Amino acid sequence: MANVLINLFNDNQFRQYLAVLIATFAFLSCGMSTGWPSAVLPMLLSDHPPVKLTSEEISWVISIMNLSNMLSPYPCGFLMDRYGRKHTLLLLSILPTASWALITIGETILVLSIARILNGFWQGIVYTILPIYIAEIAEPKFRSQMGTLMSFMMSLGILITYIIAPILSYTLIAIVNGLIPIIFFCCFIWMPESPTYYLIHKDYLKAEKALNWFRGSVDKNKIIMELDVMQKSVARDMENKGTVRDIFKTRGTIKGFIIAIGLAVFQRVSGITSIVVFSSTTLPEGGFLCISRDQFVIVIGVILVVFTLIASVFIKRFGNVPLLVTTSILCGIFMFIAAVWFHYEPTTLPSFQEYKWVPYLCFAIHTVFYSLGVGSIGNAIRGEMFPTNIRAISSALTTNIASLTTFLQTKTYFPIEQRYGMQVNYYINSICCFACACFSFLFVIETKGKSLIEIQEELGRKK
Image (cartoon, rainbow, N blue to C red; front, top):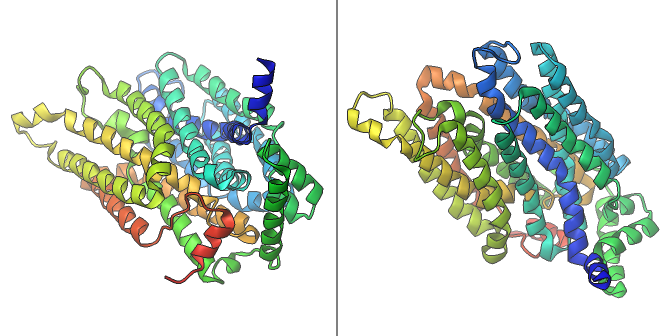
């Protein structure tokens, strides 16, 4: 038995998955903070809320986290190249712990806003650094599957929050959320740094040691050859100091930036934000089958977790681009059907009330295809699009634009509903899904099974 465990631990695939699984506890923390508004919204809107807030104040508590996401990527882009991917994440994991501590004691809009801002800082840091860390430590044949673990853990965090919300108090929910970054710190501290970080600082011995750990029982000659290729690639990329201007210097970096930004934005505007944050209050009362609308958010969480987990199987079988195109079209169709339902829902047609199940079913199916497509692939592909010298600044800028998109999505949802009707939000989401399909077909390249160097070569190649 001992020999079996030793052989398992020495297996290169096991070690890489172990490191990625532990690292993505940071995404689990982000998922729980993302699911928190929907979970506690019924409590805040009840007759005896834990914290007395107006509707306008509640909207700011929900959306301000996405606004603060925009502030942290730039400094952490510098920190990750200066002090390392691992140590930056460890050092700044204090932010979500402090945030949840404030929520447990906060009784004013000011304290809750500061708490959500800290959580927003943390999300911006995780979205910027973690895709790069995973892309740099994973072998090409495993990288796409490992990348989907980010989305899986994000979805799992949302689900956990939905599940504990009906059985725990407002304060206990915050305490449980605060434990996750502590667990992340205690486990991730034992994982190696990215070999690429050591190569940037020309510390070849530490780079070789880190790569040896991640590759486990792989033949040492192969490891040396891989390290040599990585070293030459990093040296070539680092000849020019990475700045925002460098993103737009070559065909390859421009195209990589467009792909990363496009998928990050389409992730946010495809409709999942509307479903995750607002479905507990916007779906019609009466539920679907035996499921109430409060319980339905748990169903959405389960769908996100299950189908994000199996997305890697589909990516391995079909590749990124075909999956993105197909699932985006299907997302658009079902979001459009939901929009039509909300368009006619205010009518007084008696027969229309028999179809309250339609938006429930549409949201569920939409979430399935979102999880298999842009929801999983968008995060995984971000760390693959940029050369070493601009990887940090490009990821930071991508996170910044994605955060702004999420903020605008959450902040304008209720104003659009009040002025134009609920259906307009979902018509916009549907159009964005179809736009994502077109974008994926025209611009996104296939990265399955390719090294980071091969991806850069393809990005720079003229068709």
